[in-house]
Length: 262
View: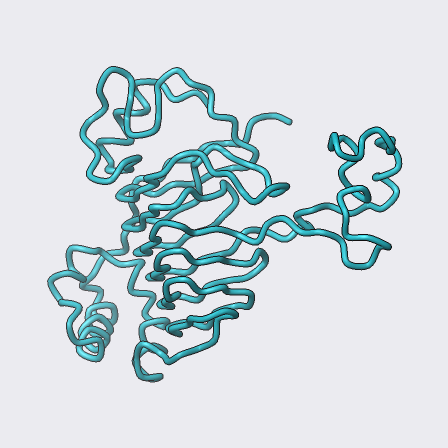
């Protein structure tokens, strides 16, 4: 994917930011993006307006691979951590710095967990292995699990570690330093190593109603006028507006970036 100056300017106009409080594009640069550079995409990426990918190229754990720094992200969400292309992040999410993923593993069911069983080109073992030797184990360091799916209105604090193959429910909070290896329910606050549920952000009836209303799909200007201080009042007023047809759905500009041919 080559970013032209025209595309970079369009991203700026729709407030897709590639640096915190990014100034307008200058001299072909916009945050960590550079016009004319080919950013290779291994998968399709969808980015909504009013979002921020502040940190650029993603590098996984050793064996976990790397990607362009573009990622699927919804409106009003931002990340101070590089994100992989295949990750899914909903709207109104806040991701702090230091996020890492358990995206590289060693085999547990072979004779050895050593790289000699799956890294035939590694210089430590290449004198003793042929590439065909590793193929017969049919084992991959990433184990084929997808990167996490993050719902809407999720806050991931600093220095969090997420396992692959999990989902973070809408409204959840991941405390700083947490190691999350299992799905996180909506509106749960989790922390620790391994992460456990500490509490729930809101009463069950309120969180259930917020999920039913899918408030993140509606006009943000109207939501802001309702106000966010009282969740129960917010639910009641939004429900009345939806029933009366007095609030419009929110359809932000969306940028679609196709994967490069294999």
